[in-house]
Amino acid sequence: MINVMLVDDEAIEREGIRMILERNRSNAEIIAEAKNGKEAVEFATTHRPDIIFMDIKMPEFDGLVAIEQILQTLPETKCIMVSAFDTFQYAKRAMKFGIKEYLLKPSKVSEVLEAYDRMVAELSEKNELNERLEQASALVEMEFILTLMMDHVHEFNAEDWTKWLDVENTKGFAAVFSFQSEILRPDREQKSNWYRTLKDGLSRLPYDVFVGPLTGYQVPVFVKYGDYRMDQFARDVIQNIQRDLRDCQLCVGVGAVIADLQDFSRSYQEALYALEQVQNHSGAKYQVYTEQMAEKRKERIHFEEEKELLEAIKKGDTQQATFLFDRYFQSVQQNASYQARIIQKTIENFFIVLTRMTKELGLDRNIQMSFEQFETATQIREAAKAHLQRIIMQIREWRSTGVHGLLMQAKEYIEAHYQRNITLEEIAEKVGLSSYYLSKLFKEHFQITFVEYVTKTRLTEAKDLLLDDRISLKEIALTVGYKDPNYFSRVFKKETGLSPSEYRKQYS
Image (cartoon, rainbow, N blue to C red; front, side):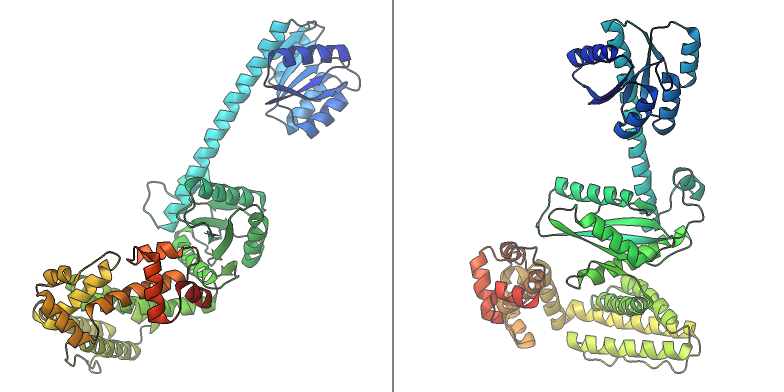
């Protein structure tokens, strides 16, 4: 609807224009009428009309003075001047305010409607332009966040971003919002509603933010840092936006403040880690990254890098293992503050762990190594890498010819395909053994039958899935390879002593 205000000291004139619009234009709604310039200014501020029909000669002050005051606060409002005087002086003053429509009393119906239609067309054109600019700005914001988040190389430089966004010499931090819903698979419209609610809520709050795209259930945001506590920011957002959200809970992780936009990806990773802590603690809604969390995260990254390296070695992947070892060694150096003796002990401990792993595989060789004779980190790294490459060659040879290698391939195949109805014959063909001999070797070496191992693998995964109460029991059964949910429940209870529902209730 187009909101219209009529201003004239003569009621009959206001009534005449009202009747013309109401009878001929269904999109026009008369929201206010004023009988003098003073009322016109007051009513315009209160009702915010799209179009004003303004008489020029009125008590208090004339229409041109009223228009001048109104346009100072409502510059987008369109005005149509109405006068009984065909005076060039009035028209000239009106043009100074950008007013192009001027009607003489008494106005013909066609003249009133034509003037109205021209103003509506200008409003539509302006609104369309504003919408396009808003969409363009939103896209620039999203691209800006993605560029910072992923540390992309982009054809835009810092000056280009500053033209669109006020980010020059800006301190800030990353925040990652997450929608946690009981709806198992929310549709696109539902997620779009959540996203719009978050964006609208952030725009209402006194924080300067740039909002990234919704990916999965997460929205990354860059927040300009001001004179406030970051936990206050998190609380304000949760409290103000949660009440407008339906079917989901909002939580947020907040990264550390950075002084250079190029460090945003670091703050983003910290925000993700903080969000992970929120999601691991029932009832928590937000978490701000702290120095204590930084130490724990450093330990976890070190552990995960070591785990990933051991996995590549176990598979005999020389190229990947060498790459991961270089990354792991870099982490070891940093944690040891580049002190050679600490690095030496850490790498020796790594080879102790590696010896244990190879024995579990069935490769019973002592591959531990002392690095006491080396004085620098570079010497330790090169010696360790050469030793590691020899070990990988031994593992590769053993995997290709040894019985344990074949059995490990069988186990890995089960772990990769347990979700479907795999058979002993299928796996035997894969590793090049008869099904009878594979079954016999499997039982001898692992003290568990093929079927028992498949069941164990499926139930291990099922236990993890049961911790997420958003996933139905039927979906879990299908995910881990059971077409019949009732059969899945019986197998689960036989192995664990609890039904899936009881397990979820006890551990989630």
